[in-house]
Length: 208
Image 1 (tube, helix red, strand yellow):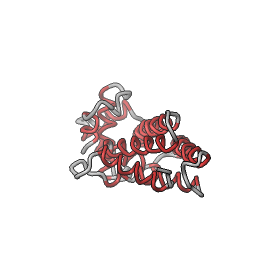
Image 2 (cartoon, rainbow, N blue to C red; image 1 turned 135 degrees about the horizontal axis):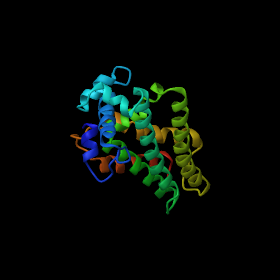
Image 3 (cartoon, rainbow, N blue to C red; image 1 turned 90 degrees about the vertical axis):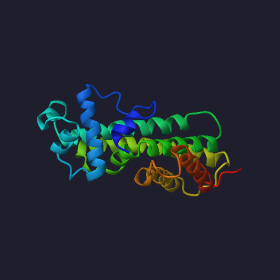
Image 4 (cartoon, rainbow, N blue to C red; image 1 turned 90 degrees about the horizontal axis):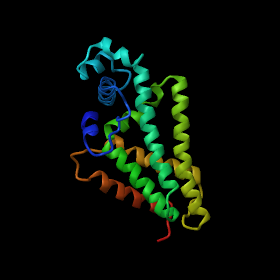
């Protein structure tokens, strides 16, 4: 599934805040190119060609290829943080909130797997300033999940001797969905979300 098809599917349009239309077309083309070829192997000409535009047109909206990657990464990480913080601050027990966080986070990585691969796996291609910004967003996402697990331990719901390590394992498990998910596979994003929520609750020793 291409980034354009991801954009067309569902109500959660991932690039609605990118304007004008030409800038959005270029960004979606960049997502597809980066996902298929990798950031370093992709040229600005590749991106412009996929968008049906001239290479010169790209520079009207983005100064560099790295600026395009940063925009993609920022939007994706903002969405990830929104999902996890909403679950962390939501109602219910720690187990219910952790299951909700994992279910929603996994579903996003499955539904937007092309976009998510770029967002999650091209971090090192960012310049130092932009990389620092994105790392801070990742730190906040980590903190949201760590908060839920810590609260579950304090409440006696979870048996977790290493909260930071378990938090890393939970996030890594969810993020990896973007790498292998196949839209033509036998599991839907919702089904994968449910499976992973159950696996994570078992991982933390959630009391049934």
